[in-house]
Length: 398
Ligand code: 3PG
Image 1 (spheres, helix red, strand yellow):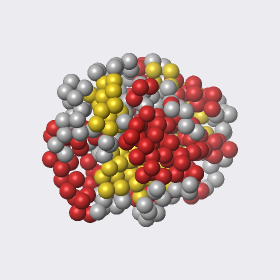
Image 2: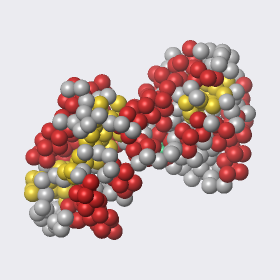
Image 3: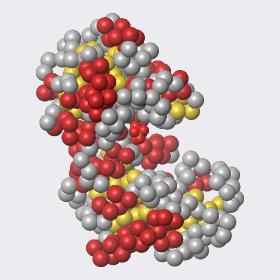
C-alpha cells in the first residue's frame, strides 16, 4: 500500500515512522543522510495538508529516557531542512506528546521523543508492543512507514502500529525496496557484490545467499582476514574471527562448486597499531608480519577491485574496505567508491548499502548522484539481500 491508498489527508493526523538513527558527536550530527532521505515523504504529506506526528529512534537506550539519546539534534536539523514548524514533544506517548499533537495545525510537524525511551517498543512480548502501538494510534488517523533502516525490526512503531491504523509505505521505503529488488530478483550480469566491514559473522546470511546469485564476490574490510586465515595465511594481529574459519572454508568450497569467483585482496596496508598516525606499510596479503594489523586493502587490490566493478552491469557494495576514518587507511574504500562511480557512468546499476559505506562515500567527498542508489539501511538492506521477509514490509502488504 502506498500513500495514495490513504486518500485525502488534509487535516488528518499522520503518524510517520522515520529512521533518524544518525551518527552523533556529542549533540552534533556527523552525517544527516538519513534525515535528508526522509524529506520526500515528509514534504509530500505536508503539501497534502496533513498534520505530521513523526516517530523515530536514536541509538539503543535501555527503555528509559536518557538525554544522551534525545532526538533534540534531529528536531533542530529538521527545522533547517523543512519549510514547516517542527516541535519536539518531551515524551513518547505521554502528556507532552498529546498536548503537542492537539496543538498541531495543517502542515505542521511534531516529532515524538525517542521511541526507544519506552521499553514496550522493542519488547519481545506481543501484548506489550501492541499496547504501545495502541497508544501511538491514539495520536493519529493514519500511518506511513518510511523508516527503511528499521523495517527488519518487529517493533511497535514499525510493525504493530501498522495493524492498528490504515497503513502505507512511504516514498523512501518504496524507493529502497524497488532498488534493492532490482539486484536481488533478476540482476543484469555480470553481478558483482563487494563486501567489507569488520565482521564476517554479521554477513554470514548474505554471503550464503549470494553464493547462488552473484558472479563475483569481492571481499575486503576487517572480515577479509578470516578469509585469508581460512586459506592458511598468517594475518598477524589483524581482526580475526577464529570461530568462523570453518564456515568461511565452506564458503570458499561452495563458491568453487557453483562457479562464483571470490576475489580476495593480494596486498594489505598493515600498521603497527590501530591509530590514525600508526606507522604502516603495504605488505603481501599472504604474508602479514607478526604483530602487524591490516587496516586497509592495498593499492594493487584497490585497483583490481575497481576493475572488476567497472566490468559489471549490477554492483552492490556493503561495508568499507578499511578504516576509512583514518586518512592513511581510506585508499581501498576510495578505490571501490570510484569504481562504482565509473561503473554507473558506464551504465551499470550500482547500490551502496549499509550505513557505514553510505557515510564513507559522503565523507570521502563523492557526489551522491554518482551512484544509482545509496541505501539508508544497514541491517535492513543486508536482510533484503539475504532474501528474508522483513516484518515491517510484510505488514504493509496485508
Ligand atoms: C540502523 O542503524 O541500522 C537502524 O536504525 C536500526 O537500528 P538498530 O540496529 O538499533 O535496530
